[in-house]
Image (cartoon, rainbow, N blue to C red; front, side, top):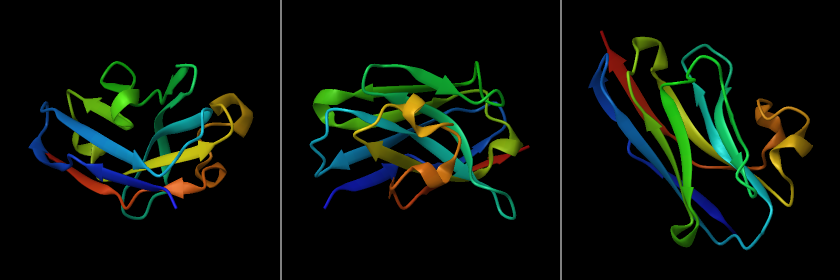
Length: 128
């Protein structure tokens, strides 16, 4: 049984930076769509950024230019580098994955229900 484990969340002031990590273990698929979602209290879970097995990246407009998704395959780790953080970025951030498919095969990468593998989440709080 595979696992996704996030780390790196915390509390920062507006304008600050954080780097989230997602360590994947127990998966042996060569094709995947993996990425980051976030959910603020009372709001829908929303897609932040994803990357697939051939390196195609999609990023939400709300974070474009501020957040960067990257992967380190030899460490089975996914990252989300976040800079210029805003209070509206405050949310629980989740690592998500769907295997045996590339992101374009999910219909829309933003649909959280298209992903069957999730981490526990890591909290990011940005104060003004």
